[in-house]
Amino acid sequence: MIQEPDPGAERVGPSGKDISARPLNEAVRALEIRLLKEALEGVQYNQRKAAQTLGLTYHQFRGLYRKYKSHLT
Image (cartoon, rainbow, N blue to C red; front, side, top):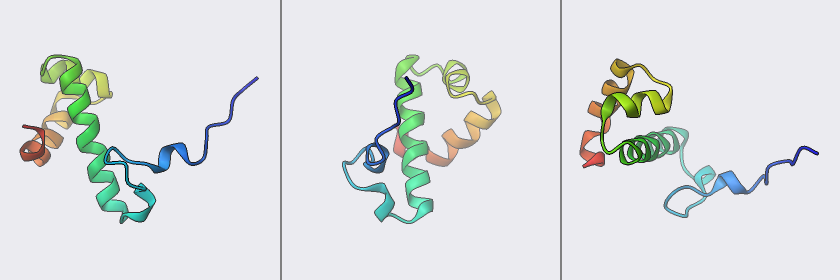
C-alpha cells in the first residue's frame, strides 16, 4: 500500500517556521542553502562529491556555492 505524505509535513522549514508564510524566493533560498550545507557536510566538504550528491554538475554546484558562500561558512 502506498502511503500518502502528510500534507503538513513539508510546510515547516529548517528554522521551524511555516515555509508557506514566506515569499517564494525566500523559501527557495533557504532550501538551497540547507541542501548545500547538508551535501557538503555529508561528503566532508568535497565539492565534486557534493555536486554529485545533489545531481548537479560541478559548475552548477560552484555557481550556487558562490551565490551562498557567506551562508555556508
